[in-house]
Image 1 (spheres, rainbow over the protein chains, first blue to last red):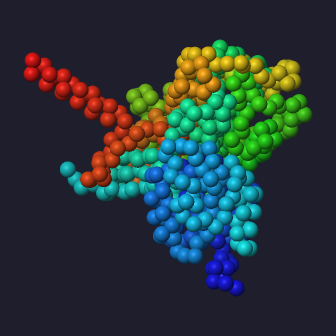
Image 2 (image 1 turned 135 degrees about the horizontal axis):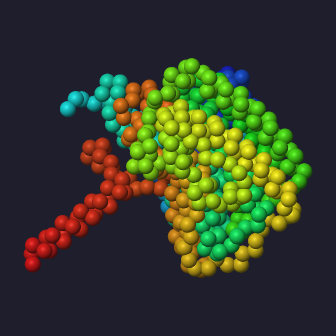
Length: 136
Length: 401
């Protein structure tokens, strides 16, 4: 067992960074934690500080305002950390890639481990993405 | 002057779902002043809109906000139809209203959940979001997606609601109604929620009128403002419903207005379904060949208040100018009245009380002073400054003559 898989063997704690998003992905992420999908029974918990997190979920297109803050948050994160780009905007910029305030999709700013496309991805898709990432 | 402590909340704070920065200037426990900084969510949607065709803009304005993703296309459709002088068919109007009201139910349930979460009532949070799921299932059944429905287009709607679906919609709605009863009972009768919310963050009727607040924020202070009644559109004049108001203006009144509005929404949907059965199936679209030159104003009542779209057409296939005003833009300004004088602990729920939606609002210019990092100037102040400067120059010119 490698160091990375040893680190992610038990409960994953998640920090959520919403860039310039339309809120859909944010809500679907929260939806994963509420009774129908209830990820908390697997120990997956949304935490308030990046310093406690194992996974960084990033959604929404990144504008110039967010860019510096995303880099700062990534630098503060304990390593190793898994970065997941969620939604069309997080993966490629989506509809907002042509926008004048767009400062690159997430993978141009910080290294990304997994992409979950969809506008917004269904909670099932988010769960499937995380499971694939952990089993990698 | 006494010393004030600055407490920043955000831009990335566990309390918030969206990025925004509040600066609370506190004297001990009491909030004395509040400033807010936005711009973390700016996507230049108005500019993007000018590069897209009318059919494409619907997909763009839908993604202004994921929670009210019907109200923006709704207002845009109203604006473009005003330019083109089109009247959608009755069936299309009913379908539009059904989608709009379903959205109101899911948005209000979402707010009740989040408000419960801010108060430390995670049970209310979990319940409300659990009962919201059937509404999202309905959306998936009708439109094919849980959020961002893509139902609207110029002259009508994209998909029809077939007769066999109406039965299923009725069944789920009855279920939602019983669950709403349960939730309303739990919230309205809880003594802790009473003592936390009553008398907190009061907005008087005069404050609402001064700040021009809209939606449930205004209705909770006794101002019966609702675009669906004041400037009727879609199927709202065809059905019977009433505007819910409360008089107190505190956060409890806002919660009360939202909970009772859900019942009105359910009743509107039931009436729309009855109307839908009378209309001919498949008659959902009026053919539009071109959008003539002109200007159009479109309004729609989003769950948070009035959404306003201004569209200017130059006769081409894309808007020449598109201006959007979201309800949170005016509602956020009321924080100056409602938060000041509260304790820090109550400030949180007061901020949540207007159900602010920043992804809707991010359409303003904000200027920082680089040296102090403190002084914030918004577009209005910039304009004032510019006017003052012009006046100074004029006076100088007069003197030199």
